[in-house]
Length: 261
Image (cartoon, rainbow, N blue to C red; front, side):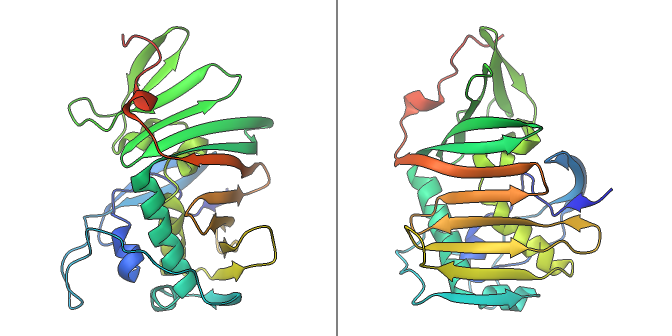
């Protein structure tokens, strides 16, 4: 069975990618199913100070890439040098910190689905419309894991980090920074990634395409200038497209919809 490139919850801060596309470090390897396919998932320690100084704690306003471009990178140094990629990752961090609500339409697990996510920093809420299930995490540390809510009550599903408690097919939507982490993992394991900045559609997009290599299944995704993931595809039965979104989030967005049992 082919494996998906590591698309699952990672603890490494993406600031390291936004600043210098730092490596994954020496993390513990866990096995978890991602988009229905087993994949090795690294968890790494936060980036430490190096020759270039400490990783930044804030992200400054960055301009969009200067012009349409396409490049193939096959190692970490090439990824570090990719201006469209590093800018897109920084914008992903900014929109996550600022909070947003997004609706995605597409299909996975054999059916068409609409998924609504709300994200603000470490907090998230995700719902598959019409299926009666909601996952919510308020960012607190006293009760780790996310709440799975259905049939009038909520129960805690363990996961570390909490996004790991969410159905594996939804994890890239709840935590879109997993995708640049997976790109980094791919090039470190011998894959090639095509990074493109496109201006030929309704809005500029920066896209990353990881081709299938060795025993790994490829994937692709695009990010708009605001930092929102606009599309994500992997394999023959996973494709999600952003249909609408609004900026901002409130505390009420992350209150469990039912009592916790």
